[in-house]
Image (cartoon, rainbow, N blue to C red; front, side):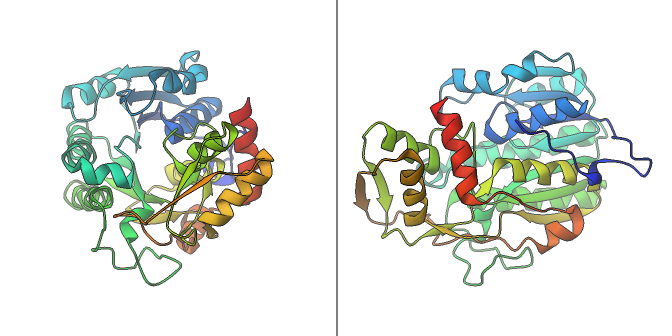
Length: 331
């Protein structure tokens, strides 16, 4: 793990500002990386995670192995859909900042289970905002998604683009979360940044996400399902760059903003598979399938706003990120 500290994380006396931080979904892919970095800097962290059974509990426990050894870390197994679980977190450690990563993720599963996605992603976010109001906690980072852009015709995607045409329930719940955040900013004076993540990958990536699933299938001589002709494309963003953006957001948090966090580079599905083949030194067995409902054609982030407000400067080339991911996966 690389420790990410930049100048945006210090005050005008060049001192690191230590905080009490609540991370929802802190045992997951992005959350566990963030927790590790926060603890290494010296912050106190409380984490809530419900070990949702979409993948093995042991994977998440492994994710927070380092964190559990720290005196500055408290873990609460609980669910954001339960306000009493959230209140336990605030009573354990009154946070000055909340990073809200907990959500049901994935476009295709949201189509078959829209009520579950609404319950977790919308009502869960509303619960958190209400508990923050009750405890007078004013600072929130909300994990949104590039999926809110749908099949936007204009690229790269900008935060000022029209995003009222989601094409999956998952995307609709993330848009709803942004609107709730704006409402609480307006009514209750919360400082909130909604960070739109673009296809995050890297070590600890969830087993159901494409890069990990494809890599494991190639390694195990199993076919991979490729939807469409391979021309769909994504703005793949390496985990270290996302964490850098979150850390800068914590220290620059003021007002209400929507901010893209991506690499601002586009990789096609065919190119992604070819890159995995090169690093695994093994050919993929491809099962060609038609495009699926809810899948977008491309994602591509305009990151000028992130550069201006956060000093965001993504460094990871896709080839290098995949190399690091494969090294982790094999280990």
